[in-house]
Structures are given as structure tokens and as C-alpha cells.
Amino acid sequence: MTGSDDHVPTGFTYDDETASADAATMLNLLLEYRDAEEALRRRVADVLEIGDLDLLGLRYVTRASEQGKPLRPSDLRDRLHITTGSTTGLIDRLEARGYVRREPHPTDRRSSFVALDEGATTTVVAAIDSMQASILDVAERLTDDDRTTAVRVLRDLIEATRSSNALPAAA
Image (cartoon, rainbow, N blue to C red; front, side, top):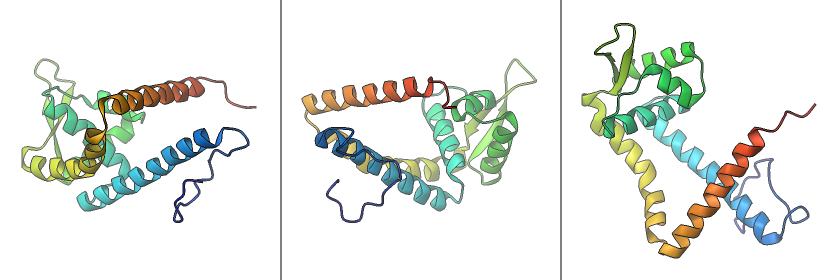
């Protein structure tokens, strides 16, 4: 449906019977993009020799470090929607690889912050930036009108997805 001969069905696609052909094509391309982005994320995780979830956590730590904002383990837990124990394990793995370090909270001895390790900053930022560079290039090449439309559509899709998440589970 996308015109790509090498497209691998996700098992979750839209068809022309439930949506217009153009809408189905757009949504299937979005699913295909998600699959391609996931494959790219796995390659970057492989380069850094970490798992997918660890890479996502590392992206949050990197973003917080770049913005100069402290990131508590509980912030990471909440963003990743994982347990406290899983968060500790994730930070332990990233710390063992030399990517992050724990820093004591300046006023609360019971708390700490997670920061990007200075020695790993170049490696981590280069890996994450390379993952995002070609995608950013596409967004930069859009006209202002196309970018405005894309932003609106993506926000609407995000809201629709979040609203669907709020629905009660099927019995």
C-alpha cells in the first residue's frame, strides 16, 4: 500500500475498507517510519553496546544534561514508565559502561541526580546526534506551510493516541 516492495507488514495496518486510500497510505507510512526509526535506534544501541530501554534512558539523561537541568532517578522512572528497581538497574548498567554518573543531591542526602559522564559526552552525543541528523534534515527541508501542517497532524495523532489509551480495556 505504501509503494515500497520491501515493506514488512507490522500486523497492525490500516486498509482502504476502513479508511480512505490516502488516509490509509499516510497512516501505514507512519507505521513504516516507526519501524525504520526503531531499527535505527537498535543500531545506535548496538554501537553503544546497550539495550533499547537503556538508550531511551540515556537520551533523557543527555537532554537534561544539555539543558543544564538536574535529573533524579525518579524523573527517569516516570518518563520511562518503569519500576524503581528497573530504574536502578538501568542506571547501574549505564554507569558501568561509563555513560552516566550519580551525583549527590546538594540538600537531600536521600536523593541523587543522574548526569551524563563528562568522559562519555562526546561518544554519546555523537551517537544520538547521528541518529537524529538525517531526520532533522528532512524536517528542515520542509516549507514553513508543510512544517506547520506536519506539526498539526502529528499533534492531533498524539492526542488521538493518548485519548485511545484512556479508554477502558476490552473485556
